[in-house]
Image (tube, rainbow, N blue to C red):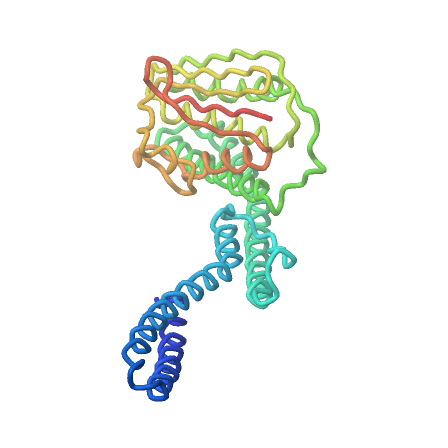
Length: 328
């Protein structure tokens, strides 16, 4: 990639020097013979000074002229990956307006494509929920009436697969709802965070009991402003993730304090170098554990649209993982 400064120097300096040399040669020829040596020394000095001044002037002018472009570039680099807002045209020089218009047109088309994909994802997930719930009900009905070992085992496998499909469908729907383009701020309302966690208790107590995990809840009254359904998705995914990755006979603790939600476990923990990865979609650090790799990505997106800060650290005594959600 060539530099604008160097290209300008290459184009402008040689012609300027040639013109100066021509003028100097003419002055040298017209000067009296006894003054020609002094004229020559003066012309060489002037030529060197003039050349350096031209280089400095061109370099300074181009650098100053490129500052708006550098600011535009820095602004684009500083944007979040999902920030598709148009660039303000009034903040750039006239010469850069065509570039800004082209960028804004591209951002608009990318936004339309993203919205179309999210709409499709939400519609598919929503349409799958009802038939999957019906399938689960029918399988449970069959299991209650057919206790033969072979039949019971097949029904148990089908029920397990159906429950995984329902969970993944719900995660896809939560992921679509948590997208900034789909987040409806009109649905924000004051909510009792401790009550939302309490509503989820029974589901996870049963799930933890199956793995002999000691799950505890320390809930103090806490009110936050948020979307009831999305915050329930955030709570469900954090607790489910903790139970899923905590080995049998481990412990999970869910704590609510004013403005805070924490979920702590004493499982294997997450290495510091991989903590950013776990919030990316479809990332699972333990391939032996079932899951879609969407749970913590959903937590991240929901926290972001609520203006909350999500952190991940070590649990008590440096063991396990501690997820903290700080609401503003």
